[in-house]
Length: 236
Image (cartoon, rainbow, N blue to C red; front, side, top):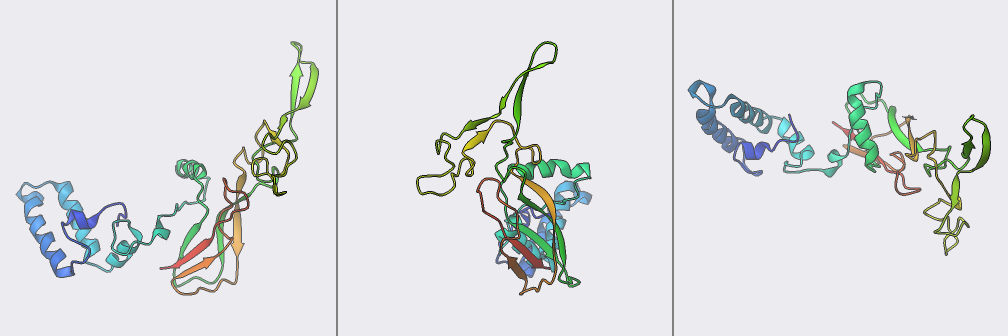
């Protein structure tokens, strides 16, 4: 089943059509595109794939999880990633994930679920307090012989709060996160990403129906300080 394919369009049917109408359309299209009568094998394969989904128990799942389905639930469009980062095939997906500010996590479980989970989760980098900057770094100037001739702090005062670290309401400045300065160098721990990937372990989880939502157990936001997504556990 390919959730990115519009099986209804492929079979020229509508969301409300029953199995008999879908089956009738499939037979009609099969007669036209079957390879044995000169039809396109790839087109016939797509027609058959669509029929096998829409005329089986898979239809309910497709309707809920595909944006082309009849009962689409946007939870299933949230980015899903295998956090086994040792496998190079996942690296491109991981890099794309980091570029987006996706805070919520969706995990699917089956009937064997025992109330325990271990999953990948982005948390705020403690080294830079979620700023992505290294305020302790120094700029070192050396002469042609490699001798240090000058060292000075590698940070600037924050222009938004005039270095006070507070906004006009007395809250932490949203730009420098209350630091009063804006570091020039990125944090060496998170490489400027403001958060790092770790493993979260949860026990004693009790499911509440087909979807169980746990607040503040998703990813820490990269772009909004203090914002944490939710964990959604979906029972298949």
